[in-house]
Image (cartoon, rainbow, N blue to C red; front, side):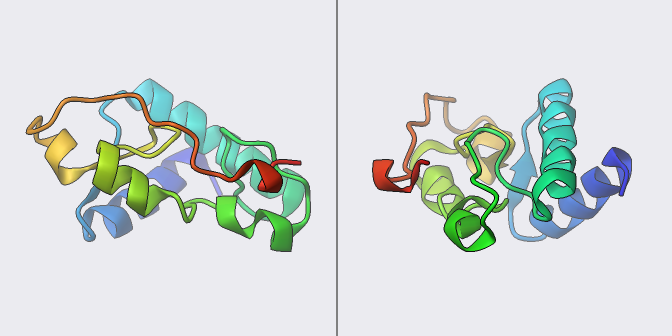
Length: 109
């Protein structure tokens, strides 16, 4: 899959859920490129902002969209990577802020 195809597919499916790509398109395409690289490397799109261990079961919490995305979007308006943002942040109804790592330390390999 090419980056443009991934962008279009994810944009359509996520916007239907009220979730948007970051307005920084360069960042978005860099992250999507890393997701595709991780898919080639591991066989799944592991979060490009975290270290994957090449074990799908151990990494299932960080397969994009990761399990931390929803609480990050709800609390901060963006996910940890900044790939996805909430409707409120997209509309500039809230300010962007730092998103801390939610992944428990014992899951980091």
